[in-house]
Image 1 (cartoon, rainbow, N blue to C red):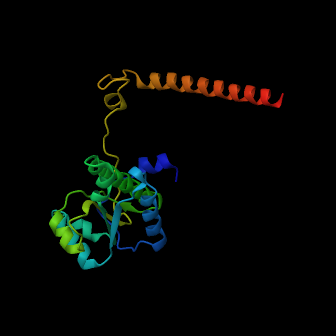
Image 2: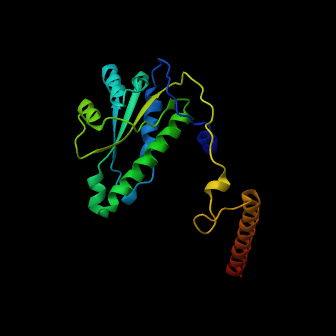
Image 3: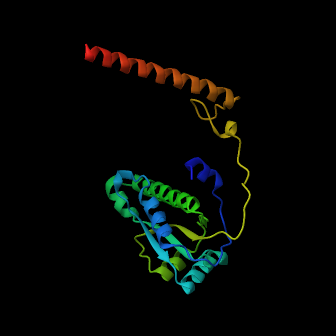
Length: 210
C-alpha cells in the first residue's frame, strides 16, 4: 500500500472480529516500530505482547473500563525506559523519550493498516492497574496500549481542520491565505532549483572529462 494512502485510510477501530492475527503480520508490526527514529539511536522503547484472554479483559477494565480493548485478539503495551534517555540528555531526555515512543506507535499503527488489520491508540488507562497486570517495573513509563485485530466496523474519516488554519508561513500565526496558490508557486520554485542543480552537475562532469 502507498504510504500516503495508508495514512489517509487509517482509522481508530474499537470493534474486532474473533479472528487471530498471523504471526508474520505481528512480526512486521514490531519491526515497523523498531524502524522508527530514536534520539541518540538509544531505542529505549519496549513492548509487552498480551494474548491471554483473561489478561486482555483485565486490561480493558484498566483502560478506564473501555472493555472493548479486551476484545482484540492481541494487545501490545508500549513502554519507555525514560531514565536511559535522561542519562544521555538530562531532563530533555524525558521529552525525547515521549517523542521516540510516539514515532514508534505511529509506525506500528501504519504497519497495522498496511496489512489489513486495525487498531486504536489508547492513552487512557489506570497506570497502577496495568503495571500490576503485566508486572511492569516503576522504571518504565507506560506510553500506550494498542489493541490489534481485524476490524468489525467501518469508521468514516473524522473532520480535520483546513491546512490554511494550521500552516503558518515564516512565523507562528502568519497564515497563508491561499495555500494552494502558494504550494503551486513553491513547487515551480523547487523544480527550477532542481533543474539548475542538474545543469551544474552536467557542467562539472563536462569539465572533468576535458
